[in-house]
Image 1 (cartoon, rainbow, N blue to C red):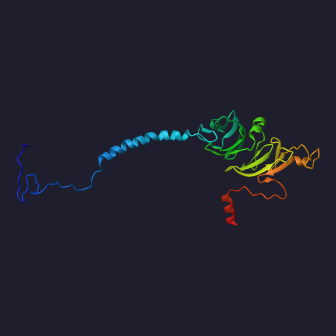
Image 2 (tube, rainbow, N blue to C red; image 1 turned 30 degrees about the vertical axis):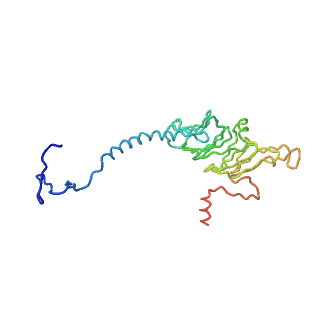
Image 3 (cartoon, rainbow, N blue to C red; image 1 turned 120 degrees about the vertical axis):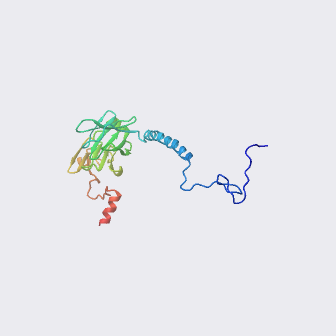
Length: 271
């Protein structure tokens, strides 16, 4: 049996000393005004926010550590200064040097590979590697734009080196040719698109190191074992070939052009 203060009995219409109405269960009045959010939610959000903040460096490091498909390691050493850097091959890397201070701005290497030829051009640089791969890098060292493989060129490149392999087909190097004994392959430098291929004449082979540029045209040597008509001494005209950014120069050629698709569309709309 419970003990304590005696129960208070109230008549209808009376109020207790604390203001409670008589009769029936009593519910205290609810406070008016905006309700405060539960403190438990804010207490849970703080540890979650701290955990996410701590995870950001780990996520960034994991992203930077992802292996690249071609083993590229493009490392920026100093902030870019005025003017484009000077480029040269040193050992297994392409080095970019500040023209004013001589400091290294960036280096480009590929795992287990060695650069054989380098073509510096306004805004970008083209490199041929000993595994037969061609790469194009922005001159400021911010990105490698594309890679292309030279068909059947790796073994010959390792044996012969890269002299004369890269040729700029225009002053801005918007078109770049890769010359091997079997063929001349031309790429659009902005996106690496293959624009044209010129195979060597049967019984002949291009000599990449033997070429001269004259009025926007490359005249490249193409030594032949025999003449086109079977003659023992081939004519000299059969042993050279002239090319420009549109391909082999011939009276009846119909080049497809090298403009980007958007440029072609804009040109057609302007007509």
